[in-house]
Image 1 (spheres, rainbow, N blue to C red):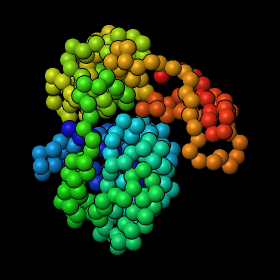
Image 2: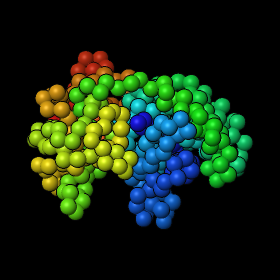
Image 3: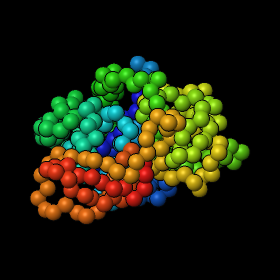
Image 4: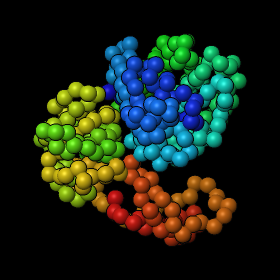
Length: 310
C-alpha cells in the first residue's frame, strides 16, 4: 500500500478530486458535507489501474484548521498539491507547501483543478515555478476537472509513476504510528487509527503507548481485517490494555524500548527571524501538538522545552 496526502487552499477542490479519484466520500462529518468545507482529516482509498493500492489523507484547506492539516501530513511520504485553475496560487497553498518543505517531503504531484472553468496553463506554470524552490522540486503536473472527468486517467497514470519512485520502507524497522483518531467499537473496545510510518504491526504485538504497554488485539487496513501491516499504510488497531479516554490524537504507538522519550529538543533555524523570537510557541510533531518554551543558544540554535514528553 501507498499513502499520499492532499495539500492546498480552501475551496480549490481537494475533497472533490479525492471523491472523483476514489469513488469514496472523504468528509466524515455531517457538518462538513452540509457546508462543503473540510474541517478535520478525511480518508479514502482506491486501487489504481496497475493494481497498486493507494490510501489518501484529505486535509482541510481553511487557515483555521492548519493544525489538523499538520496532523495528517506528518507521517505521509508524498503529497498531492492542488491548485484551482480559476483562483491560482493562494495563501493556504503557500502555507501548506511551506509545511511540506519543512517536513522535507520530496515526492508528489501537482493537480490543477477546475480546468473546465479557466485555462489551467498559466496557473500550472506559476505553481511549478513556486514549487521548484521547495523540497518537492520539479513535480509532474496534471490539469484535471473532477466535474467532467477530464484529466482523471492522466492523474492516475502520474500517481502510478510517483508512487513507484517512493523509497521502500524497511519492514524490520521499529514501529512508529502517530494516532489521529481514537474511538470504541461495541464488542471490540478501543480502536485507534493512523498512518503506519515505519515497521510492521502484527496481531498480538505488544507496543508502547506513552510509556505504558498495550497489545494489538487485531487490525484492519482499508476496511478489511488483516493479520499484519507494513509501512507505509493506513491502519486501524484494536488495542487491549488501554481505555479510549486515555488516548488522544498525538499519542504514538512504538516498538518498546526503541525510542527515547524527551521534553527537550535542540533545533536550528533554517531562515532568519525578522522579529524577536517568542518566549513560547507550539510544536507539531507527527500528529502531536505540544506547547514549548524557547531558549536561544548560540547562533541559530535553540532549545525547546516541551510541556509534555514525546
